[in-house]
Amino acid sequence: MLSRFIRPPSTRFQGSKGKIISWIWQNIRYLRFETVLDAFGGTGIFAFWAKLHDKSVIYNDVFRWNYYIGVALIENNGIKLTDSDIDFVLTKHPHIEYENFIQKTFENIYYLDEENAWLDMVIANIRELKDFYKRAIALSALFQSCLIKRPYNLFHRANLYMRLADVKRSFGNKTTWDRPFPYYFRKFVGEYNECVFSNGKICKAINFDVFDIPDEEEYDLVYIDPPYYSAVRGPTDYYLYYHFLEGLCIYLEQGPDAWDRLIDYKRKPKPLRHGTELERKVLPWMREQTIRKAFEKVFEKFQDSILVVSYNSEGIPSEEEIIEMLESYKNNVIVKRLRYQYVLRPTKVDELLFIAV
Image (cartoon, rainbow, N blue to C red; front, side, top):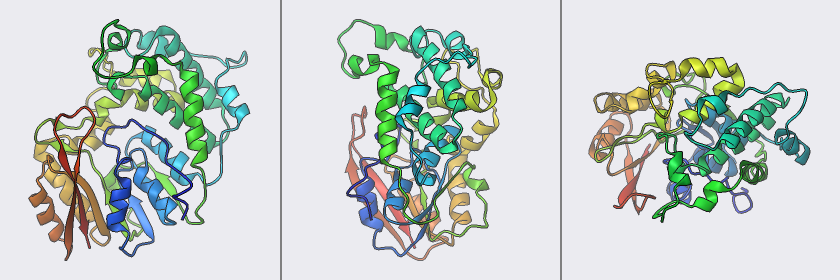
């Protein structure tokens, strides 16, 4: 077990369990399991922790940008970005034809004009990397660089003005926002490189809607950390919050025209349109009238595995409803709780961990 030597990369992803992962693991370490499915992988904290503890891990996430993080952290057993790779990504090359899609489409929305041009260049350069795992590390570092330079670390508002305004600030860090992209890219590549290792087990990243994960694999334990629907604040709209990062993946894989066709130009943040295939996959977790059925379907699908569910006390369905659902399939359901203060939230909530065996 390597956990004392390797730490997962820092992240500003909404809902990340990075700060409580040791508490989660402390509560499940007595369970007997060797194979793990992280069904809603996000930035890969749980899957990475399981890999560190010598488990065979399948990381899954419906978002393409999260999938690349899973590839870089979980599936990748030995490939790192070299200094020459980094220099290549950060340099403009005469033999590469560069688009200006981000620069012309997202002007004055998220980043400065020269920063948008830099993003256009870097996406084209990453596309030229021949090794799939090197591309995954480069993209993962780029995603974290994009997040750290955003107010709230989100893309739900066209609010570049918040970064540029000369006012006294009660949150955020203008110095952080204004540091150049190459600085952060190198920083995060370093963090991801340090996390590359093999535990000698089969570890893989996949990119499915949770309901479409192939059934031929069997998992001793399934970890479930779905988007929360808060009874106080409503749904967690990852589709809106991180549309720009998903767009970067479309840009790299399919070109600017593919991203352009999916943008809702009537809305100021220029998010991905409503009604896309991706949104249809995440909608059950964003609607009060469908989220209970979504939980039931997931519990039914993986009923033959140990189920570990991360949740919190503000969520819909309620704690009592989750217990009742789990008890339909499992004989023993234990609830662990941790009082936790989330960033930018005035009140504390109980972080819940359901363990169903």
